[in-house]
Image (cartoon, rainbow, N blue to C red; front, side, top):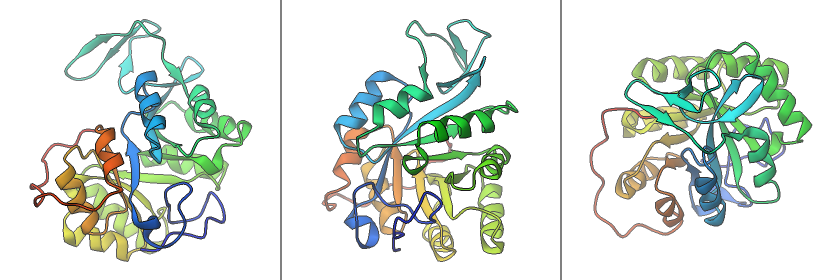
Length: 257
C-alpha cells in the first residue's frame, strides 16, 4: 500500500505526519483512542509523538465538546447504557484541541457523536477558521453527518467507521461504486486476512480499533492494515519497532468505540 503524495487534505491514502516514502515510512498510523477527551491523555499522546489523537465530539449548547458519553442537560454528569459519572473538571472543547496540537506532529481525528443538525456546520466553520483541514479528519458510525460535512467542504477528510458486519458489506459496495471515501476506521474483530485484503484491494486506508493487545496489533498490520487505534499509548509507540513476540490471539467479539 503506497501513501499519497500529500497534495492536499482530500487525498485518499493517509500516512503518519512527517513520514515520507512507501508503506508509511515503515511504520503504522498510530491513533490514541480518546486521546482528546482528557487533558492527561492529550499530554501523553503528544509527549509520545503519536500520529493522531481521537476525540469524541458533540455539539452541546453551542459548544463543540470532547467526551465519550452523553450528558444530562448542563449538569456535570455523563451517562451510558451501564454507567453514570460525575465530571468535576470542565470538558475540553475542540478549539482547545486544535490549538494544543498546532505546531506538533500529532493530528486530530474527530469522532462525530450525536445527530444534532448543527454539528456538521459547526465542525466545518471551526476547521476553516483554525486553518486545520490538513491536520484533522473526521470519523463516525453515523455516515450521514460525515457526508453533510463533505457537502459543505469537500476538502475535509472523512473515515467511515465500520462497527458491524453490515457496515463492512455496505462500505465495500459503496467504495467500489465510488460513493464512499477511501478511508475506513474498522472494529478489529471484523478484520480477517480476507476482509483486510478486500478493503486494501479496493483502495482503502484502514485503521483498526480498539486494539490493546500488541500481538493482535502486529497481526493486523501483517495482514495489511494501515493503522491501529489503542488505549495503550506506550504500545502504539512500540509499534515502530519490529515484532519479536508470539503469535497474536484471536479477535475479540464486542466492539467498543
